[in-house]
Image (tube, rainbow, N blue to C red):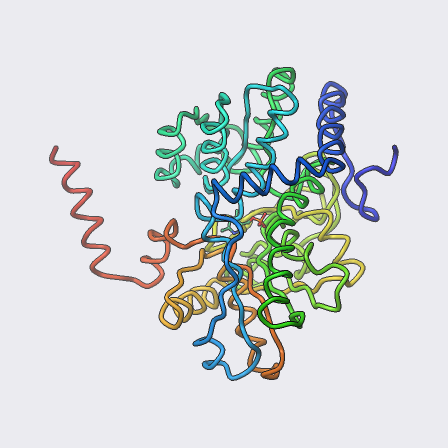
Length: 409
Ligand SMILES: *Cc1c(COP(=O)(O)O)cnc(C)c1O
């Protein structure tokens, strides 16, 4: 029992006494589901009919000839319902909630993507839904807040602390302590106390298993390397899960922000600025100072802007089982632009980190080598950020005109 949920020295479940029984119940439900082949079957059936799975594995012919190196494939998680791999996790947890007989879900969200995904799941399953979001994020992410509310969720702006994601997580735990019997906390990534890292990874493994089958089918051999961006680590763990027993190099790409030496980044596993610590119920590498104060993080992509990282990835890092790199905001925007004009595909800024790193390495590989890039999400949501980054004058004009219409009304 003691070592449950530990990955080497990382992970664990550092919980207030009052939540222990609830976590035991969740772990029980998860363990039962894992052993039950019908559960996985009902999950894949749901994902097929509701979220378009299996998602395609697209051969990026034009990027491949552009770089004159490895054959580049893209796993299309952007084609999921709500536009990202997040659907895999929330729908899976939704099925578990039904099993546990609970009627209400809560979730934390930073950029709002996990909140929107959770709100769709709650609507579909008929659960009440409350989403906690830092007040600063509520102001920055109005389009997602709008959709969550239209989908029937209540969005609660959190005014504590720095009013961002980590404060929303604390507030969600506070809600849970008060409403344990009726409520499940849909955690958004492969972090947090046990069993979340393992459970979220299990649901996301659907994408890695598919990718492995698909590449074997079209190429008849394994890729040399696979690339995924790393925020909390759920899409990376999902992809890596398909290749853990294979001679495939696993590459995780963190947010390099304005550069690792600038201090303005969110790189936990490939910078000197993070160290192991315990916060928010689990042990992992956190971006913290010598006194354990969490540092400010920066990334052009809100989804990678997080101080912690999956304890399972921290373990893989320590063991050398995966390699971690970072891509800067500038490199990411360039990779995004190239992917758009060459392939007609618009990756999310998060996903574009994986593309940027793969593009650095592809030319050094041979034409016999295959690489897979996980496109964790679609970029439509990033239109404000990307238009700013491209400094598009017609977009600016449009925004100013829109704002004018409201101020005259
Ligand atoms: C949320 C998000 C991420 C980061 O989350 P992980 O748990 O690290 O996968 C990456 N890409 C997209 C598109 C996202 O929405």
